[in-house]
Length: 175
Image (cartoon, rainbow, N blue to C red; front, side, top):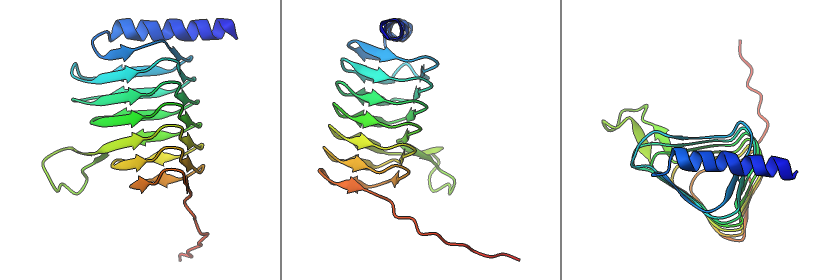
C-alpha cells in the first residue's frame, strides 16, 4: 500500500513538473495509467491537497479552461473529465467508477460558428456521485447531494438531495 501511494505521488510530481505553468496546488495522488492532457498554455488545473485519483482516469483541459479539484476529492477508476471552459469539484466529493464529466457539447446543429457549445459544471462539497454517471454542461450540484448510479445529470440539483433518473422499460417493435 505504501509503495503504491509513493508511486502515485511520484507520478503526480512528474505531471506537475511537466505542466508546471498549468498545474497548481498541493500534494495529490495519481494512480497507474491515469493521465492529464493539457492542450493549451492558458489552461489551468488547481488541485488542492490530498486529492486521490485512481487508475485509468483521463483529465483533459483545452482552450482557456479552468479545472478546480477541492481538498480530499476522490476520483475512482476509469473516470473521464473533459474541460474546455470551467469545471469545479468541491472538497470531500467522492466520484464513483466510470463517471464522465463534460462542460461542453459538440455544435451539431451549427447554430453558431463555434465548434463547441460550452458551459460550466459546478459540483459542491461532500457530494457522492455513483458509478456510470454522466454530468453534462451547465450543471450545478449542491452540497451534500447524492447522484444515483447510472444517472445523466444536466441542470440544477439542490443541496441535501438525492438525484435519480427513473427509466421505464419500453420495447418498441419493428418490422
